[in-house]
Length: 412
Ligand code: KDG
Ligand code: MG
Image (cartoon, rainbow, N blue to C red; front, side, top):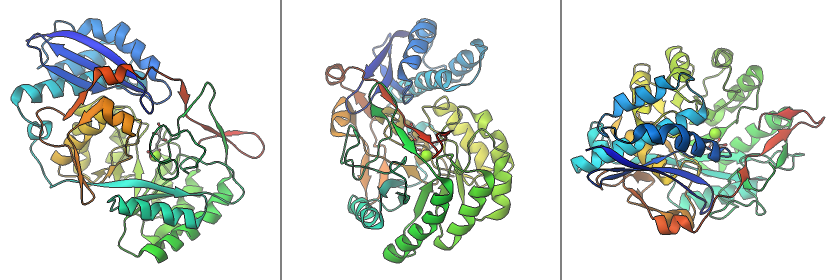
């Protein structure tokens, strides 16, 4: 059996997705997610021009060898475009192997270690009544863990806060924030870290008072703080017992986390913008994080995700794979299979895709009692409806950016 055909499919049902579809000489197909939010067409070009020609004629069963081949022969290692491309190939090959074996992928990764995956949803609001409303909505949808993002007095638009006017592409904007807005220019938002630090502890105090001690609460700092500011926030959130504080400082400087660690016991989650196992090497070895936030789509696929988690298990570090809507149903399925199989699963981020996306990507996964399960179809459990996909051509969309009051560009 050889890889006979490799197609790159771009579709934009509720938002843009890039999918690689491999077909073998025996007619077996496999899908891989290559979506890089806001830079989708760069990955399309990388795949079409530089990867697809190398795949034709290869043995689809040689997953490790293909991964190493694509990683090493480019010479220019790492980077989100390269790694999303390799990820798509890796996912599609695991998909084919599992289909040929007649098993859901998690069985090839060691079998299920749990009944399902605890998943958290995104609640947000400008002020407390909206936040409570959004948390209640998520609880009604079955979520048993909730990320809380809040508006800050004096700031107009902030990442993570749903607004009625946002073009989210899917779902109710009020409950489901989607940062990548369609349009030829990115949206400008505003930011003030001191105002944020003054406001957020009171929000979590109010949420704890309203919803009790049991509910796991998470918060995303989205790379906007300095190490000292992050330490201060972590410390001030300790009474509210967060499940995690995510991306408290810019991800490029991992050394910064040492300072944060010295000052707070609030658990830290990092890694959604990391591209490889190498990016996680030092923060895992130095035990600077509690949860690993890599996404199967952005760090080279199932093969390195599983290796990273096995390494993390030596340090009691758990998974918290990145799962916003820009991870396609194919990527979500792939990381659900990994999460089900590994021992050190922590939690899965789960932003529901829109109705049109669910028609393009037919999925076998289930959502019961706050637990996700990828289903038991052979392979990944997602099929791409090519006719549906064809109805939605690519639309330019950008992530937003931030400016401080004096006009300085800031991390968003
Ligand atoms: O593409 C970027 C978004 O997916 C990201 O901003 C979402 O921070 C995010 C999260 O935690 O899901
Ligand atoms: Mg995040």
